[in-house]
Every structure is written in C-alpha cells, then in structure tokens.
Length: 363
Image 1 (tube, one colour):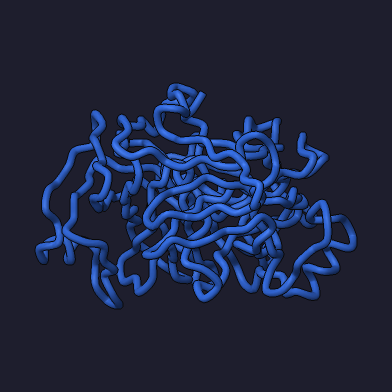
Image 2 (cartoon, one colour):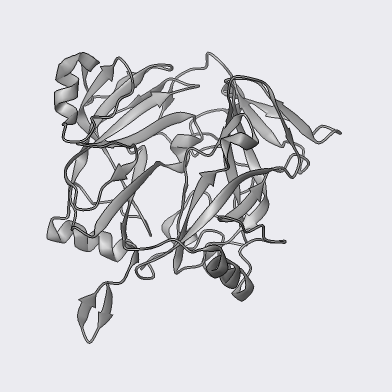
C-alpha cells in the first residue's frame, strides 16, 4: 500500500511493516502486534497451549489440526503460562497467539527466526488443511500452529516467546535471473562476482580468521530462548580452526555454524530468502532461518555488507565441504512498498554487519 492522493493503494510484493500494521487494524491478522512487526515480516508468538506429539504431521486438505491431535497424535498437553522445557529430540506443537483472515490474493510464508536457527531448533508453521509446512494459502482463515523440534539443545520457552516469523505476499514477488542481474549492476549485491542461476549463489568460507565455524556440543545445559547474552559459547559450541587443506568434514547428524564468503546487501525495496541448493549436490542441509529483511547489509542503515550465517547439518554420511564451495542461493523478492524502518542499527537489529556470529543468546 502506497499513498497516492492521500489514499492507500496496493501493488504486488512482500508486505512491508506498514502493510502488516494495517492488516492488524483491519482484522486480517489478529493477536498482539506490540513488538513483533519487522521491516518485512511479523514475529509470531507462542500461545498458552502446547502438546508433545508422537511425530511430525500435516493435517491434509479439509482437515483441522485440532482433529488430528484428537486422533491420537497428542501424547501430552503442556501449559506454557509459566514456561516449559522442550526436550532435544522430541516434537511439539504449539498454538500461536496470532490468527489470519487473508484476502483471496494474499498468501503467507514462514521461517524460523535467525536466533532460532542458530541454536538448531527446527520450527515450522502448520495451518488447518495444510498439505505443506511453512505456508498459509491465499485466502486462509484460521489459527496458526508452530511445530517445534530442538535438535542439539533442549530449550525453555513460554507463552509470548517468538521462534518463527511470517511474511505476507501478494501476487508475483520473485525476481527472475535477468532482473536480479540488472539489480546487481545497479548496485552490487555481493562484494565480488555474482553467481546468478536460480538466485544469487553463496559459498562457504573456511579460510577466514582464527575461527571459521562452530560445532554444537552434545549434552549441554538448557537454553532460555528469551534471555539475551546470558550464555558462554564454550559451554555449547566447539570452535573450528581453519585447516591448511581448506576442507571441513561434516560428521553425520552434527550441527555447525559457518559463514558465507560473500558480503550481502539487500536494498531497501527488496526482501530475500535463503534456499538450500539441490540435495543432489551434497549430503547436508543449509540454513533453517531463511528471511533477509530490506536494509540487511545496506550502507544507508549501518551496514557495509553482511555475511550470511550458515546453519549446516550433515545427513547420513560424512561429507567434505571445501572453502568456496557453493552451499545455498538467495532469492530476491519485490517489496509492496519500502518499509518505514529498515533492518539495521536504528531498530536494534542483532546481525547487521555480521561475520561469523552465534545467536543473541550468547555472550
């Protein structure tokens, strides 16, 4: 929605903060919007009620999440009013405080927040009638749920905690490769040659600095998701030093924090999302948290290009990563309007100008 002659008009694109605020005012989104509106997304918040469930599931077309829980998938109901422990290796479902009543031409996409992904907590959005995770279909009306599965560390969360985020999109938003190349020519999106093929390619840095990554330690203490700067990194992660060979062997089912070689820029009129490369190129998964806001790394709001932190988990077999190896792609999307506030210092963003960095929970 842009102002034209005093009226609000809407163009295709990712909803900006002003659209999200208007969506709350009109009832498209219901819930507590006090602090969750970001430049191009909304931080979703946990409700009071959670369930430990037997296994991850999707309700399927025409079926409600509540009905599936009553079918025997729920093992235990949990009250989050005063907080609860989500145990490593278990799967939980939490009803969120927000609900949607989307217009017929607006859909939603969700991802874990950056700080959630960096502590290896797998979070996915579930909606009634869903045949896929992390999607709210166009015109969806109903409740929202978060499936939560801590992988490396057990966590403490409570009603009001925020682990994932939602973007609303109208129409065709994604830039094709021709448009992305033109945007890079107008103002460099990375600090070197741009690998553009189905998005902007990102490679892993394994030679930069005294520490090139972190590997999660097993059997660590709890992490309270709402406490910032409270933890000693050494209690939870093992630092990885650069090897002369320039390689890192990923051990099966281990979790790593690595960083991209490239410094990224997301201009103010665009948003971006990290997508993994084809599974055929390697036995690993990259980046649970995929959203990049307008202004990330942008010089106009405190950035000088920011590296992408890569949350990496190997699969069934050991796999060799080499310095400079392609590991992910960044898809750029048009904004429906420039946000009122960009990602950066002005709004206290945690990761502007970042290099290799653990989540906000660590000192």
